[in-house]
Each structure stands twice: as structure tokens, then as C-alpha cells.
Length: 229
Image (cartoon, rainbow, N blue to C red; front, top):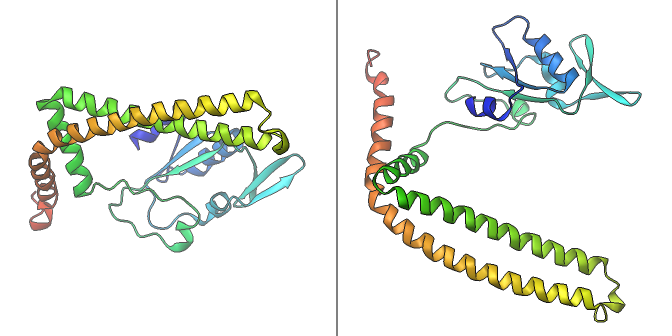
């Protein structure tokens, strides 16, 4: 929820406990705002079915959506986020097909990686920095390769097939692109070698991250033994 609030600065908050929550959602639809709908259960209000299904009604050059007995003008910039405090909700297939379900529940493997990152950052901050830099560099280089490949395909598509070999500019561009690709691939190979070395150094602290993860889940489940915890 905090991530959504940081990502959407002009977010409207609609709380199901607030009797005016439908009015807030209507305003979001009408004015193209992002709305955060809080604390829903396993069943969603049927009045929102048309919104979730995007059952729009064409009215002239604009669109409307029916909410209850009202038709609300629909702005395509509208976006609805729905959150629940339930730890393991079970939504029906009907609900799941209407929305994109994202599970933010912490799992042991993911928490172990997070704890490992924290330990490495405390014990070997330079290793953490190097790893982050290498990940960024690898992603940027992969992106450059994709862009070069797309550019080559686009140029070949736009060129006259009968005159490709006579198109000097195209041939020179293709040769330059190939040279750039080889340079990027060399950089990627070096980056992956560096990542392998960094990973080996990072793995020295794996047991600490694993124990921290196990400890968290043990403490989290103590209330099942006795409510006093």
C-alpha cells in the first residue's frame, strides 16, 4: 500500500468503512484519477461489477459506466487499486478474471534474499554497491542490444528489397550496428564474470540470511501456540 501511495502522488483514498467510498470512486472515474480502495474482503461490492469489467457505454464521443442506477462519465486515465488486509484471501474465479491479483505476502525464500542483502550491505558495502552497479549495467546493455535489433529490422522492412545491396547508407548502418553489438556483448561477458565473482563473495553470508528468515517466521507464528505472543 505504501508503494502505491509513493507511485501515485495524487491518489484518492476510498475506505470501505466510509459510507461515501462509492462517491470517491465515482469522482476518480469522472476526473481520471487513481483511486486506492482499502480493506476489501473476499467478496467485492456487486455495484462495482461494471467498473471491473470495463462495461462502458458509448455516449457521443465519450464513454460512461453504470454504477448502481447512475451513469458516470468515464475518463480513460482512471485506475483502481484494491487492497485487503487478509493474509491469505481466496477470491472466486469471477473476481480473479476481472482484476490483476498481486500477492505481496512475504515468503521464506524472498525474505532470505532481503536479509542477505542487508547483511552484505553491513559487512561488505562495496560488494553490495558493485552488485547493484553490475545489475544496472547488464540491464542497460541488454536494452541497447534489443534497440539495435529493432532498429535493424525496421530499416530492413522500410528498404526496397531490390535495392538493399545498393543502399550504401543502410549497409554502413548495418555494419556499424553489428560492430556495436559485438562491443556490447563483450561488455556483457565481462559484467557476467564480475557478477559471478560478486555472487561467490555474497554467498559467504547465505547462512546468516537463511537463519534470519527462519527466525522471522518462527516469531510470526508464535501467536498460534499462545495468543499472548
